[in-house]
Amino acid sequence: MVGTALSKCITHGKTNRDKTVRALRFERLVDGDVSRRKKKPSWLNPVSHGCYTINRLSYIHRSPSADSVTVQREQLQSEEDLEVWFFAVSDAGTGREIVKYMQNHIFDKLHNEHGVLRKCKEIMRRAYVEEERSSGSAASVTVVDGEKLAMASIGDHRVVVCRDGEAYQLRAKSSTRKWSDFVFPVCYQGETDDESDSRDSELALVTEKISSDTEFIIIGSSGIWQVMKNQEAINLIRHMEDPQEAAKCLANEALNRISKSEISCIVIRFT
Image (cartoon, rainbow, N blue to C red; front, side, top):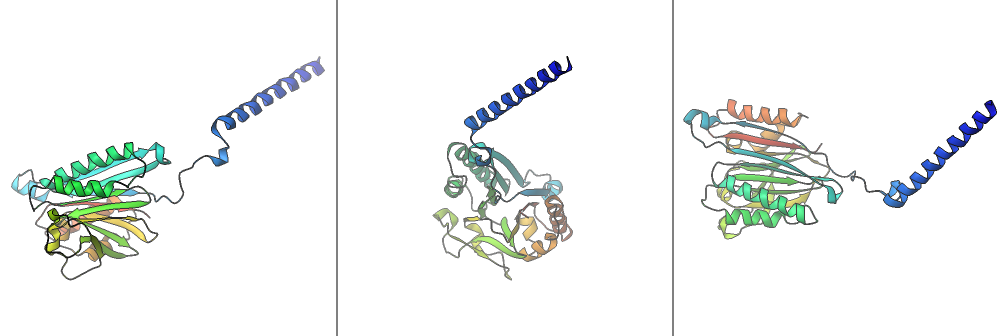
């Protein structure tokens, strides 16, 4: 009796093992070898961010002139589960309309085309041209896909990149023409004595890979840069691992220095 029960148990166990083997073979036939499945690339840089706004002028003058901070994240299943981030700081006027144009058109392209940042530069160019209404517009935008950056800036808002502790500001090359005349070449510059010049009215635009020495990016409104230099801002927050804490620290420091403009910033970390 015991032998019969043991025999049935062994037979039942063998049957279950056979079913399991067949199931595994079927899964491999449908999905392919597990080891060959696509995984999220290890070279993609993790992105963390923090943002902070102090509506100083809106509070004092009771005006709707507050800066706008925009953060949007999209997951692209067709592109190895890539994350695409859209970050922007803009003024209350044309700058905000420029950002909306970029945001809508960039993510529309991302859902319909391969190559995450392939069309970003052209969309950014069109946004600045088609939404132009005044020379006083201010906006800074950064799009991140884990491997590359697309950055654009105009007016007294800035994008400043920290590379191995050094500050590099995205700005247009020197020219007598304005950004509305399609002046799109850009360059990076380190710290200078005079960081506010006539080139603020030109469009600065660039795409590049995120290198190993790219630590973080500051996107800031005029309220930040009126009272501190690029390298000062980098030195102030470089030791902070939490980007939200860093953004708050940067904004409060600008307030303590009695900045006379709206204070808004985004800090994006890659390390």
